[in-house]
Structures are given as C-alpha cells and as structure tokens.
Length: 157
Image 1 (tube, helix red, strand yellow):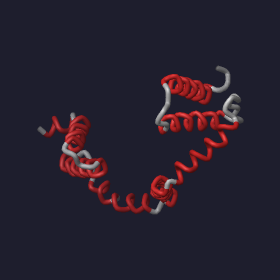
Image 2: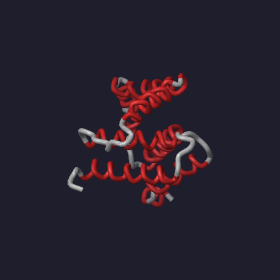
Image 3: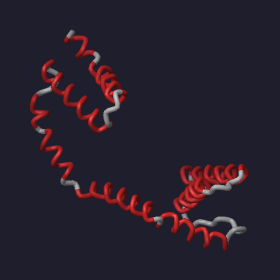
C-alpha cells in the first residue's frame, strides 16, 4: 500500500482536492487541509522531513509581513465603496458625456495599453446598456479583438 501511495501521491492529492471542493468547502481551506494532510502522510511515508512543517510558521509570518500584499484588500474595499456609493456609475456617465462629443471621430490612442483600456471600457459600457442592438455588440466585440491583437502582437498587424 505504501508503494502505491508513494508512486501515485500527486494524482491522489489532486483527487482529494477535487473531492474537498465538490463537498463545498472554500478553496483556501481545501488547499490548506489537503496540503497539511498529505504533508503529514509524506512524513509518515518517509518522503518528507519534519523540518518542512517546522518551517511553516516562519513562512506564513514572512508572507504576512509583505507590505505589497496589503494592496489586495484595499483595492477590493475601494471597488466595493465605488460600487455601493454609485460613484462608479457616475464616472461612467461622465465619460459618456465626453464621449458623445467625439461620437463620429475614430478612436485615436497614444499607446497600445490605452487602446486596450478604451476597448475594455466600451465592452463594459455595452454590457451595462439596456438597449444595445446586435450590431453594436458585434461592432464592439470586433473592435475589442482588433485592439487586443494590436496590443499583443504590436502595431504590425
């Protein structure tokens, strides 16, 4: 049995993760539980040394000390505040006011990144629109594809 577990540790571990997720446990808890259980199993089978689990708290605190990772909850909170307060919709409406003045002019952007941003804005705005026609949807998707291909492959296309 031990030889079977040693030979097929990775597929069994993946299967256990899928089972945990299908049972409805959150991804973070599923990953942590599967990692800890198979870590202990690996120590019992002689695949791992106990030093790996003894270093675990130091690694966790090392990650928690990383100040750059503080941006993730702050940006999430900022997006939630913008959505709940209605400021995001107001910003889109303001951009629409300025965009109406340039309705019949071609979109000229300075860099490929701004073209991509403009294309993504157009798709988001179209999805928020209640009376979008099929022609507008197809046109916007074609514009997005053209802009994204020029961003990825350069302006040579």
